Image (cartoon, rainbow, N blue to C red; front, top):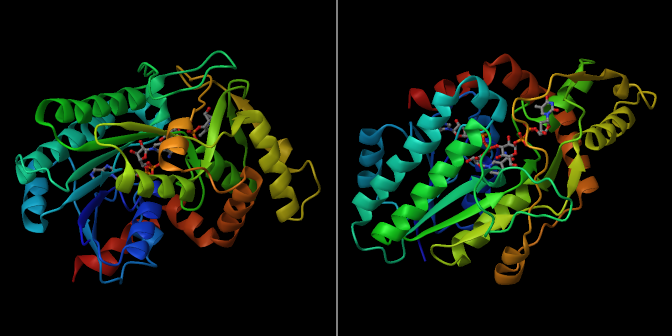
Amino acid sequence: MSKRILITGGAGFIGSHVVRLFVNKYPNYTIFNLDKLTYAGNLENIKDIEQKENYTFLKGDITDPIYIQEIFQKYQFDGVIHLAAESHVDRSITNPMEFIMTNIVGTATLLNASKALWKDNFKDKLFYHVSTDEVYGSLHNDNEFFTEQTHYDPQSPYSASKASSDHFVRAYHNTYKMPVVLSNCSNNYGQNQFPEKLIPLFINNIRNNKPLPVYGKGENIRDWLYVVDHARAIDVIFHQGKLGETYNIGGHNEWTNIDLIHLLCKIMDKKLNRPEGTSQKLITYVQDRAGHDLRYAIDATKIKNKLGWEPSLQFDEGLNITVDWYLENTEWLESVTSGNYQNYYEQQYANK
Ligand code: NAD
Ligand code: DAU
């Protein structure tokens, strides 16, 4: 069956993996990638698929209702997979308004445009909202996990904005019967993640012999999932998820930050042929993140039992692939840390 699917945020980290998977796996779908190309959006992340016939890039802002309505009317999307967001917790602490605009107003703008286009004829239509486990807040007991029934308790401006957007998506389902599906995923790692997030930042700093800023005591726990496995889960949920439902996605892979950092240091020393212990000396304990959530851990039983999805990679394998990718793509790292990548759109698209 042919479909016209709008993927938002497809020049970002996770979005680029989702766009690649859909463009390559579904040649009979037309994939539209809508992205504002903020600091986090980089078209070089998907340059391997940009010439494909079933792919179109649209540069635009999800908070601009006129532009959004225009593209919905013009391209008549059947489905939306919504990933565009401001995604970094530290930035949300310094600039919450940007998160409120993009994550809340942007999501509502897309919901309104979908409602206006689809009217009440929702047959074969779907609005898929990609969210985060951070909406559930912070776990304090080892035996607790986030399930789909866990009450929302967001603690940062980022997670509060994502929680709010989740509520709007459910409200459109409840009020207007819009067909929606949601997923809440744990921490992703892998190729093309902007080096402000823990793993790529630390790989880059080790490479450049720069300090590794560990927040607080490094005791916070995250549940890490390889980004391609998240993209696979999104594919499964988009095609088989039950309307109105939520699926938690996680890696069954909890690490305290400090243990993960030690592992990364060890891997990096080996790959860079440095004596063991070299990178560890770069560890620098710094002031804790304000309101730092202690632990995230996902119970992914529902998606496993109902849709048959499981992570495909073991963490050591995924981390090795990831470190190798960053070490082989130092140009990408230089380009995103210098800001040069922002010229790519002008060079490739703007004058065409
Ligand atoms: P990212 O920051 O790498 O990418 C976000 C993308 O959205 C960028 O390409 C950016 O240009 C685009 N964007 C931002 N504002 C926009 C706007 N106003 N209009 C159009 N495009 C805009 O983010 P990511 O880490 O890939 O996360 C993608 C989604 O997945 C987010 O919704 C995030 O909340 C969610 N998520 C992320 C993780 C994670 O570990 N990174 C885990 C679970 C869920
Ligand atoms: O859980 C899903 C979420 O994971 C996503 O919704 C977010 O978009 C994504 O950014 C991520 O949020 P975190 O805050 O968990 O990720 P981050 O990589 O920023 O930090 C991971 C942990 O490492 C966290 O406990 C804070 C700590 N940290 C982070 C940085 C950048 C440090 O100790 N030092 C650092 O320099």
